[in-house]
Length: 328
Image (cartoon, rainbow, N blue to C red; front, side, top):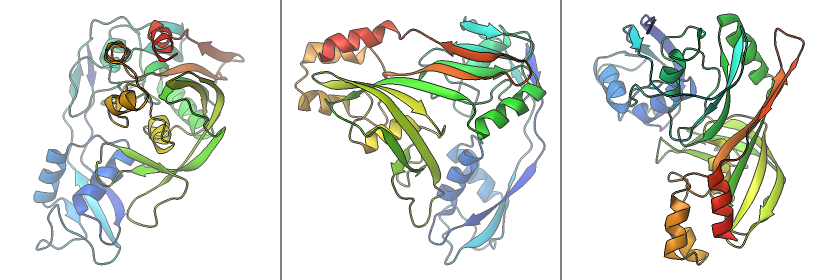
């Protein structure tokens, strides 16, 4: 059993763009800071008057600034959380006194949040790895994979290791490759450079574009390289070298290229695509069992404290071979 320390109340400053709803802006801004605040929690914070820079008369979730303005938000103190070990065996490919390389299964959330239970990767690792870098909600976590995405992650066992690994990620010194199968017999560009930002209409989604939006959203540079492409009758298997690790980057990019990842219930339309590519009902039902066909297949970097290379890759899960047979 691990008892994580709660965080004290803290204040964050932002610039609210002209014409953008306060609640939508704050939801995106806090998410960009790695803070998982539910819409209900955010509404309560606003109603409790914990927003600086806006008059009490105008302070409401739907407030829109007539011109860009400086605001602040005070987040309430967090109570200590008890992380109870979750009985799930996570494959550990490598472990030393500083870090571990683990294989996260598809369908498992990485760390606790407002809408999660006690069955996250963190809960499993608490009962499996002897030490994790301390953090209130995310002990050991340096980077994330989407709940639906299977694959390799590096876990920090000490604060020193988390800082060093974070620096390697920031400097793009950690090399990650992904394997995916997208809809359609397509030829995608080898290099995809652009920007990614939160979708204004659906704050749980991201949008990719070759140009950043002119106003209202904070866009971040997003780059990836498609190393190989293997076309099938109704789909294309691609290997991806991820240069920048943005939220939902691969999924949003593939959707932008009109080749959504098969099984992606957020960015894709499996039923519509199956009809377009004349995939019959039986095959469609079997394909649905394969889940989202995206795997973080390999990770490589220089160990920050030892004179050695860390380089691990996993075999593709059997569901990829099943999907290939159905799409050929």
